Length: 488
Image 1 (cartoon, rainbow, N blue to C red):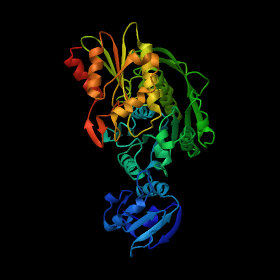
Image 2 (cartoon, helix red, strand yellow):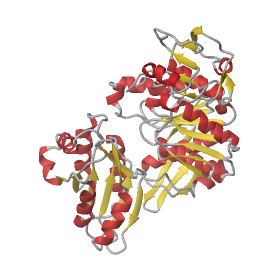
Image 3 (cartoon, rainbow, N blue to C red):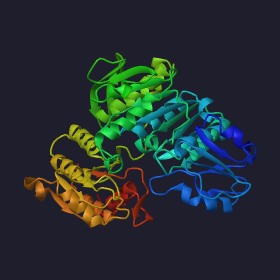
């Protein structure tokens, strides 16, 4: 419990009606989570306005209301606090309520279009392997040491986020590594957090359904670095043409990593095959278990961050050489009979799909077929659908368009939008099968000895979301089942 006055420290307050010396049992931005003597923060969200639930929160026991717009009529014995921005205030209030856990460990944020999950996960595994007790907040899962906590968002809401960080502090974590999505930055979910460092992976067209323009998407990503403190580091990918843009106005210590230009942390790919990568990093040759140029960048980012956090070069490289990547990121197995390589990857943007397909092309030895199964999510950026289809047919021998997470949209209509991106001369390369399980079964049946199957788009996800219902579905499990059933 805290007093309302204490949790309002550093919040931009416009007006107060009532007593701020009252005790607050808990805080929430969801009125359904409110209990007796709690504080409700009314946030204007994308899909709902918390101000519409103030009366409900009071009915459930809230004694303090934090809002941008004061209600027309106020309830007696309820304290109302008007703030400039409820979303920003929620982060600061949550930090105060949980004793600002981000100040009590070293928090490193990873942002960019692709690579966030792998970089954050590799950092967690690296520092754990080097003997530190760590926390992880990622798209795949949240983790405190060995304890896994299911993840619902790339970056949780401010109250959940600070509560998780507080649990990490209480458990003795010295480091926490977190994916920082553009949505989280724009919605101020990371407001009030103190970062020890920030990492930029890359930026390509994505989330334009939300940000509307690519320039706005870039601006939002950049604002994360703009707000890093002097004591933090800002590490960027210098091979991305927006890499330097991210650091233009940061107060943090600037550093870069690269495969192709001068950088603080320089890498070079010496070998890239199914046994992993052999790279030269700062003139030291190392074998890694990860595959592909995109993972070379991820490894460099992790190495650079570890060095900026004060770790020894040889210890970092030795530990990093034995670490596996995140689940669903170029996750593959080889079938028993026909030696078919089956790959599952989270590639759900044109650039990510292009990178995975380019990596597969580099691994091909001769006449193997490359069969790609791919779909696009519903209720998301529609502009990337024809581009994803074009990328798939250009770089594969056969393609099966299927459903991903159609959500509230019609899966057939999504596939039809994808088909618009297929060049006329490549139309014989693809077929459309809406049912994802049937699509994977068809890919396996079409595959011969030593062929390669890529199932893209869902990666680590264990469900398909159709009209609001999440149905159990695991791409890798289905691939295994079909290989066995079809005796491949």
